Length: 329
Image 1 (cartoon, rainbow, N blue to C red):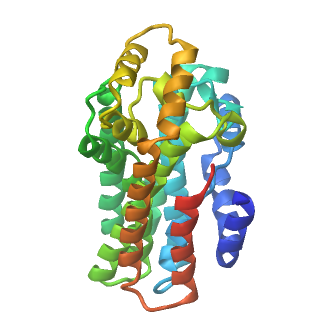
Image 2 (cartoon, rainbow, N blue to C red):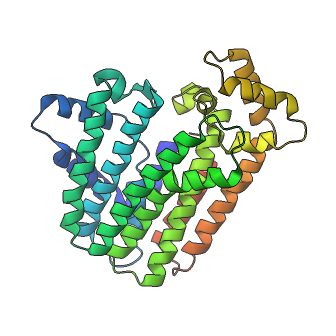
């Protein structure tokens, strides 16, 4: 699947608005400090899939499309997302993201922290422009929840006994809540009913859960040329994700369990042991069961979406579910 071509087709109806979001982001992110501008332009130089922006706009299309309100909301969500990525890279001591140097690797942790803080500060003005207290509360709650999710992730690092339930609580807070906020926010500013707002929240939440599960699967099944980081990168950083949790539940996992334990608590990780664990997880029960979970969350997202009347805009959001669960990067 050609990711760029698929998304370009799906986002045809909002392409010009996506471009306006990008332009407004750069305009609102501009600073009087050259070093901050340079770091900001560097961070923006590795664009992602723009799923969150598209989700916000497409959710607004299910009712009364108010681009004057959706524009600042979309920019605010993108700033929030980028700020969390910059801070994540500092916490993870990451040197690259999507194959490019991270802000912290180029300018150091102090500038990277302040760039993330700068984005957080800028979102306040964007949210104020919307003039809806429901959005104020939604946005502040989302920022707080993402922070909680990051803390949960730090606390879970190195824990071989991490449960499926604890994993899902972590990704719900760290990843899925922002997807849910995008779709809920789009519904709110478009004049949706309380029930429709709730349905769109559920749609975004389960789409975000599926997205993160697939991300964690790809970490075991794809290589650096595809996803911009080496296979097994999460395990290298001491992170236990769903495919490994399920793999460790297999009755025949005893020998591998000790190797995983050693890898998690060793300062110098043995590459051959890492590759053995990666192959074991990717070819076995761990990935297969994780895929089933991703499909299940995709189906829950679709159930919520189908409370809306059939339309071309609903069809795009429906196809977005398929894109998320079958993507390869």
